[in-house]
Length: 621
Image 1 (tube, rainbow, N blue to C red):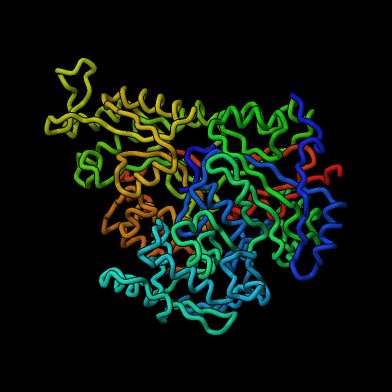
Image 2: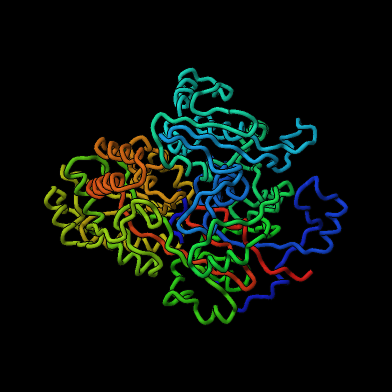
């Protein structure tokens, strides 16, 4: 679960806001002497990029986190074999730690990945057994990292990503460990995931998966070393060790308040390359600016956690941050008519604006006896709730027009998105919602002073909706109360921190919750998977299980992109809208404000390592 409802004086001079360190670490250990590093630190001030997030981190272990803050930090520490070209539009897969694109069999069941030699993990005490030598990334690290998802001891909501791919032998290995109540046998070979040699590993699937390679570009496939997992055990979330351009500065980490990354001295020489930037002017400008540069371009990233939107906005106006994702409630102030406001232009502030491949939605928990179920009266209740709510008003009054209304679950930039498709969500109506509730026996109480409706059996009907405790949630809850009251539905609102809501949702304790899912690949399969039965309790918070839908979902997965697959996806979307396990709300428009002198980060639709190529003007020494 990425972010919930995404969503401040003259800026001081740049030199005044740059922090120094005593020693600037050299770029690649073993190539620069400590004495030269000390000399370099005396000559070159530290470049620090200051950013802000609205959600507290859960921790830093790829299988165990899903909030946007943790995932974004992880993507700068851990690396997957593949990634997306930072500037190509539409998205193009390219190697990251891989030496090239994988070998793919014609039937899309067999894949061979070859890694670049010489990629090193950041130094860590967990590697003491290597006799002081840097620890190299090898094929066995990716095999181990994927197997961790199948280990019953790994608490993860991402297992479905791999189980849906039907990697030969891994599910059986997991079931054996569960049945015998013994530790997961990491050293047992399975036909579906094998090390071929030091730098090559293969994956074999039971069924064709034309888009499997996209999984190996996701943050969930960052390589984690076995020694690190064994060394830190239950405290692993606080000890991320990867091959990426940055590493966590543990001594400066204040949970839920501040996260600091610094340049990884072991990071390889990675020079910028693009297969071809998209036509947008800011992408073309970035391509010219980045040509021949080396990652990372800054020495530190300092991230502050500020949950409320107004303090984030005011802090940016005071120059306390270099980059701000504009809170939607300040979108019209910052970007009237889609153009940077004059008062920001006078400060030299720049903006990048993109329609995000994300979905804001509300789900109904099908394990809840009140809102779950497949009978006509249960379907009618959910559809009446969706029909009563007004997504257009939501976007206009709460999101301040920083989004477009969603017609189905699949967002822009993803295969399966239909920009001209219109659903009944386009035409909210209290009258039709009331008629639907009346028809299915949800009568207004004669004893309740407010005339709240009851269940068809006469029992009380009380909806429970969950929100994080922030200003946006208060506006959202007021809007929901207004529309639900208009059709006689009583609702109680529950507030808790986002991380706590994730835990409660995974354990099936929430009735209705609203948040945003962001795509990690250019495909709509993930969003159809939000209601795929086997994903229940993982990405499927609704726990919706409809055989007809599951069959459509499974059929479209094995097909290459084309008209046949698209037709199946359309049928699956119509079933989602008919049974309404989730209510699609909107697709956000994301705007990044950049202080003067900040170059990037260029927001990519599917990458989250935005700070790898970001830069700021050199501060005064």
